[in-house]
Image (tube, rainbow, N blue to C red; front, side, top):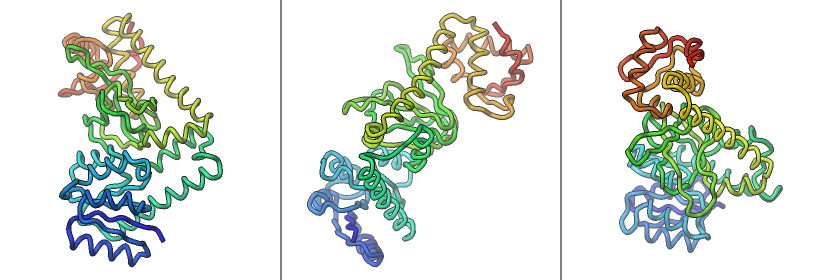
Length: 343
């Protein structure tokens, strides 16, 4: 019988949820606040933890942080229960390493399903480790399929996925949408270093305990991502050297694109920089047909590496030549072939 630790300060919710779980053939241990919850987790070593966020003594975020720092409890699946429904609250919980997040009031089946799936995942991973010394992944395409079984997060256009200087805790794959990687110079000027589209990987591959993100990653349009913790990724790559090489090659290809982009920025004419940047966005976002593309002028300037005023003058010229249309703050691509021929 699997053991569940339920940490919840509301007596009624705690008792009703415990009864539900017991009727579903789980052994249930409860704690009325975060501090007692941490003690119970270390004492009982449950198979999974279900925890409220807003509690006395320690809130749920602090509970997860303390348990994640303890080698005995860091691997226990952790599910948040909370009335906090804002996206930033969900993201904070997932960034700390939670496996799932259910909002109150929740459906009984949703809670049971979340628990069952997390326990099943642990059993599957353990079985694979016993069979092959680690999670079995035979190819980069198989790794992509594995990523699709990981935590999924949605981001609105303009929302940061991670920030420069913050601890590098996860590695990402784009399921839908486009993500830009970007930095700011000492004057606050933005430089977009890469664009990631469907099935692209991104993030910091360093496994140093104190590693941090070296740039910002922001959703360029509404996007859905899969993410894997760096601890899980380390184990997968350690036991699948072929995937390590393929992943490094894939990331290396992105670095070559960045190098080519920087060379273009350094030596191309302003007209060519602007045209090539518009086409780069069109290629990365892969809209069909191409003329339906919408690109903000700020993002164009960030990738092209030119001043906004210079970009605006060049776009005005392109508009007069019938290559683009300008709609508010966006640019609409009209003639890709002519843009290709600009030198």
